[in-house]
Length: 175
Image (cartoon, rainbow, N blue to C red):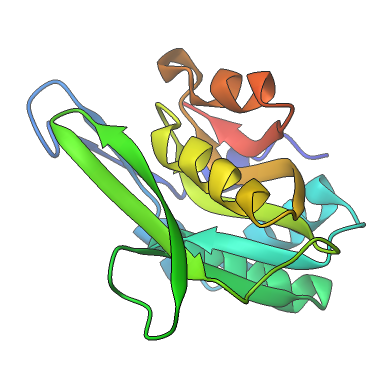
């Protein structure tokens, strides 16, 4: 696997966003790059391997990478949406935010016990949303043992939360 410094150079750092002291890692510059974005998808495909039946992406930036990766792998794509965004019968999982709670949902009939799900998002930080997504996927009886991210912020501990849940956390780059 390449070191991905070429892709890392396409990620813009924005200091003090969304609040002072935060260094925001902006993937819009990577997605905008006509060479970098498809290269990131190719490298993610190489990183995650085979054996999955569906790719699940977390709203919203996980849709960008997840849908492209699903197409590259020849798999269907499952949208994990924020509360009340899906039109059909849904199931969901609540999770804690710094100040309050939030909820993610999927259509109740979107995956089942025969599915092996690959979870995708652009970035893992504290891991709260990814942890909720794993619990939601497992509540359907589907299997999930791999999650992949473009960026990992390892000092925030999200990847370790997934590892404790027996989910391998893979990423193209760390900041």
